[in-house]
Image (cartoon, rainbow, N blue to C red; front, side, top):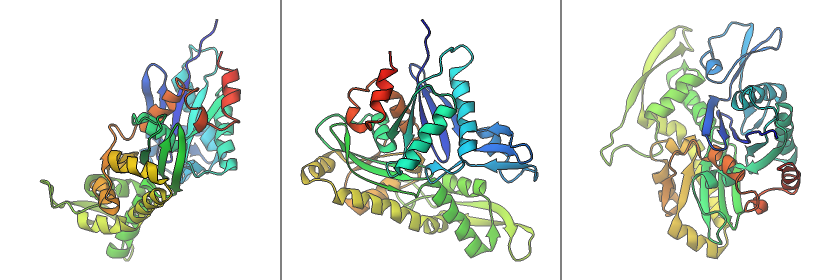
Length: 349
């Protein structure tokens, strides 16, 4: 009898994580691919490709095949997933793995089918697609199958997913195409507008991580921060360095953060009253890379008056949840589409 190890994949705009049953998260790579423009051959995938963003010759293009949570480049996504699935399965497996993969809750049917198609073409034997907020809630340890409300806000690289979950299904949700990428873009625009300085995505991401915040850093032992950034002066065309403060970064992030807060408001407004009472007691759980932005829990608390907490290991929740689905197919029946569950079950023996 042949055996294969099933895997869960968090196919993120910024990062892709692979969870293997019994082993946990085994691969964690940026969703970036370097391609030879003359031969269309993939040069490298993941961290190796991310390191050369903005540093490649004209013969090499660095591509991010996902944008705003959906596939922007079909062929490159297949190449990236092929690399990751082969690394996860290894050479010892004679049967291709079955894969649980996550999509934003706001995707269209066409976008959902595209995810399934690329995963199958990348080497999966069978593919089950699950919505990211459900996977994030599972990975965060929320009791999604109970008749009480669990509220999750998964702030990823391309999208922010907010959902209220009860009895294994999503009761109310909102998906907005705002996340870490939009935060980076906002910082780039602010620096261009206020300093006449052009910086790249890696620099903007570093600014966000090192000094970015959603609320003032003047309490609880915190203090405002600053850092030096380097780029090209748009007036002279010459390299230049400037100092930017956490207050300025907070101004830059105000608009995208407002959209995230509005998504939380929208979901709360559409939650049935009895479930709203549960949220008052149990609060909102934040997952995804955006949950690591300083003060974002305080921002959402002040905007909603709800308790807000950050999940343990927020970056891993979606991938862990995708893996847990493999062990709970019966309990997850309400969260899975009819086209997913039957074809997956038939192949499970």
